[in-house]
Length: 251
View (tube, rainbow, N blue to C red):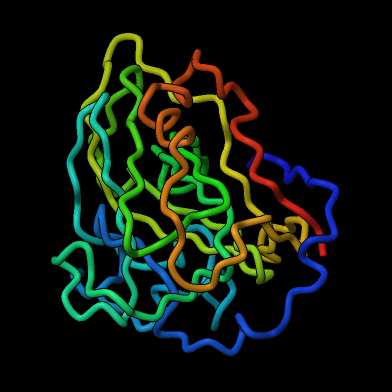
């Protein structure tokens, strides 16, 4: 995994315990593609939206059973959507206005592919500050030059999130099949960032700068959206091994 890079900031120092007191039903999970252990799966779990380490929830993916399988082609855009237990009908988007969501002040979201059942992760999308939010779609392009991955037991698409106001790392995965370039296909160079996971021996007490908003955000940043749709994260693209500045800080 990519080593955590820290920004020099004291912004998080004033954070209160409010984010820890919010109802767990408002925490966020990935609904499109349908992630493992959600209400749409054969093995729904009440802690699907909780962070890694909660009640022995393990990395990667929370340790859940295989979920629904989504099939994509290289070059296709995944309109990532989020959900929580406040949303009564996960099939309807956007959800009704006024629902509670524990965004924890936003933060840094990464979207990654694994072709080996979660042993390694390659980033294909990043949104900083305003992510996540259940009221917006977060488009992520599957690079045109990725190889095929046809074993849905090993092929995973994941959402990972380092929040602004908590020392928690969220990781939710969906089983996928990807039809790609079988001759010259190659995965992106950028590795997924992992923080605040004792199980992995990663750096602790890490936050992302976020937007500081506990409820609704302003949605995807226009520039970041263009990058996520323009091949920025593909192998050979501008992201390289560094990607965007996730704005990570240590409290």
